[in-house]
Image (cartoon, rainbow, N blue to C red; front, side, top):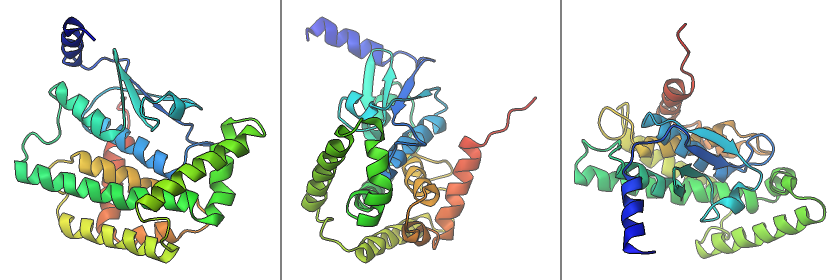
Length: 259
């Protein structure tokens, strides 16, 4: 890319948020899996918190379309950006941020809690989908394979499971028992509860991308039907987090139109 092209791209990146931004993700009803649903909802929530317009564009091959192979991704003008952290950075490049009044120390703490959520809740969701045999048989196989014809559906699911098991093994999660996974989720939720204390939000009087990320994961865990309800039951033991989820849902997803 020439210097001129780079300058042009930088100038376009600083342009106002367009009205035709599209957020690509798998189909929610018949296709999307627990971790992808959580990540897609987290990005949607962040964009709503920033009061930015977007349209959800479900595609059966959203994962294959993504520049990183992960969902969601957005198309904003000439830019295609995948996953939450790069999307937050891209939005920040347009001068739109939820953390402008936060200190550097608080921002570092916020990022640490986001890492905790991704490392525990995100990996727990992957574990449930791909390592737990009951969920894999009854949910994952049908949903992930739904967009492919036979016998490709079986091949693609087997390939994907091999990839995810390998990744979870490297992270030290494949070797865990279900009980250990639930204990890790409980420990994570307790840490979040302790940090939230009795406040409305984690940092200051307004939500940040941390709240968006937590909402995406916990709301998805609470509302996704699974053969075993133990994961959702673990989250339900933390009323402060449940109240936070309810408030975010009411504020950003249940606004009534005034006539």
